Amino acid sequence: MPVKERMKEMEIIKGGVTAAKGFQAAAAAAGIKYEGRTDMAIVYSKKPCKTAGTFTSNVVKAAPVKWDRAKVESGVKSQAVIINSGIANACTGPEGYDVCRKTAKKAAEVLKIDKDAVLVGSTGVIGMQIPMEKLKAGIEKLAENLGEDAEHGNQAAKAIMTTDTVEKEAAACIEIGGKKVTIGGMAKGSGMIHPNMCTMLAFVTTDAVISKKALRRALHSDVQDTFNMISVDGDTSTNDTLLLLANGMAGNEKIRYGTPEYEQFLEALHYVNETLAKKMAGDGEGATALFEAKIVGAGTKEQAKKLAKSIICSNLTKTAVAGHDANWGRILCAMGYSGAKFDPEKVDLYLESRAGKIKLVQDGTALDYSEEKATEILSQPEVTATADIKEGTEKAAAWGCDLTHGYIDINADYRS
Image 1 (cartoon, rainbow, N blue to C red):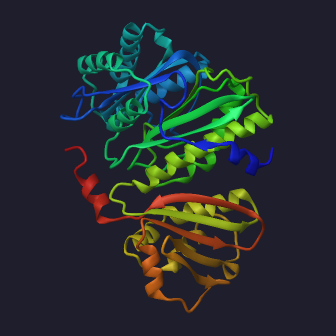
Image 2 (tube, rainbow, N blue to C red):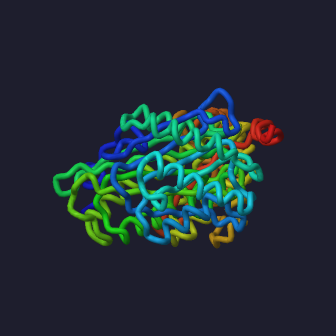
Image 3 (spheres, rainbow, N blue to C red):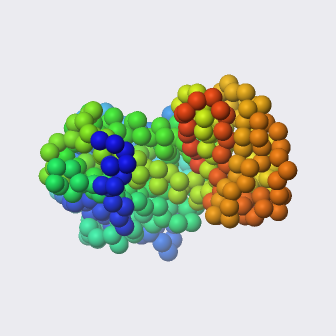
């Protein structure tokens, strides 16, 4: 099935983790670290779910990462995810892992499900122990407040925020065999963003009937072009977790890997993942702009991805965007140390935003462009730099943000 036909069938809808049939969510104020705001969330499915996940490549892994990875790799079905913000439960030793165990036990009791069906997520300060009694009380509140409407999903998305300035949600639906299949998700992430799997915390739900193989393949392949293509500050977190839960309540014929229906599912999953990833990049700590780098005309996909990621990771380029300065030499410099081979004397470079598009460089040499127009383009909330390296037909995109004084202000006193 051609991509354009699949896209016509996909409908972008309002919502997040409760958009898919059978999923509920809730938020609660447990006072784990924050006062006067919600700091716990739950995602719950009426039926057990096939689950896929990707986790941080950081050698220092938080207890929830170890817990979830073990459950996902075991193949056991999941039914609930309990998340807290404020304390990361990282570098907390055996006591931290015991918190995961006690969380699953308490959730299983109040939800009347198997304790092995409970996954956990934590985000916040590293090294602090989570007060278990507050966590247990929060779980009881979450169970009492469960709901399946969009507002419940939105409240859950807000509860998992730390330094985020906005909640992050996305949802889409497709039709497979006459059945409506929905994918929805929520995420949090603003700082400590430089994933080698996914980024920070992201939870995606679907009511699709899908094989375990197809679910895992879809997640692991798509993360490479979405969450793995963003960066805020170059720091890979101890807690990075992306979970994809499928409860099968759409009632469609089972989606199998390699079929047209699989490609259709993958297209919708890509929309949700990319939307969440871009929202995280644009909400980087202290950021004022989403900065996108596109590489076109590449010889290979890997070459394009390396070049694009190197551009959005360059602190010098990020500060130039913050200052609305068209210092294009920083972009070519970042491409040059990416590790990807290309001919700099063939590169054409463009800047684009809703204020217009301008060509800065042709064949590696500056053109006589308007600095005033370039500054206007760079002053918008979303800015794109496109480099055409004229070697082939492959392309890639990466997303980051500008680097401002606000990033230092937030992180200099994060613990206090």
